Length: 155
Image 1 (cartoon, one colour):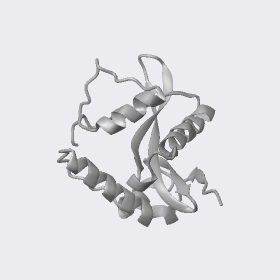
Image 2 (cartoon, rainbow, N blue to C red):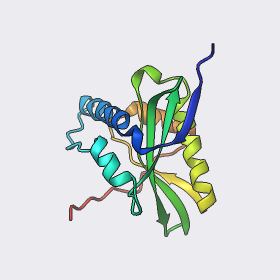
Image 3 (cartoon, rainbow, N blue to C red):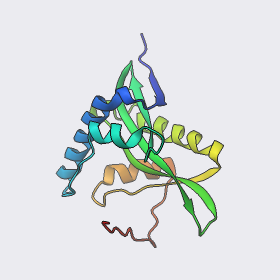
């Protein structure tokens, strides 16, 4: 029997699994030298991803019925180009499920999520040392925005 990959909207009951995957993602990035104070977990997923003022929406990938990856995003706007966009906040696929097209399916699905709202672009950040992610995105057709710097201010 052939195993199948299914992409669906993330639900509250995915919290524990998304939290586990987020922890794996954090550990992966730490292994590359990222010393960020990673705080995203199942509780943050539930608190900030659901309800009338949700900070993000999400998709999950199921491989043979088991959640093996997730993609979180929120809407945005680019005034330079005067277009709506989707900002990807996280995309992670567990190591054992990579190379099966899971990440590509998640990326295709998020583009379909944005189109009804008029989004015509996706934006996201990649940790500088995450060469594997950069290569994945470039194979997908993305390009690095070299003339922009990410600014961050805690309030």
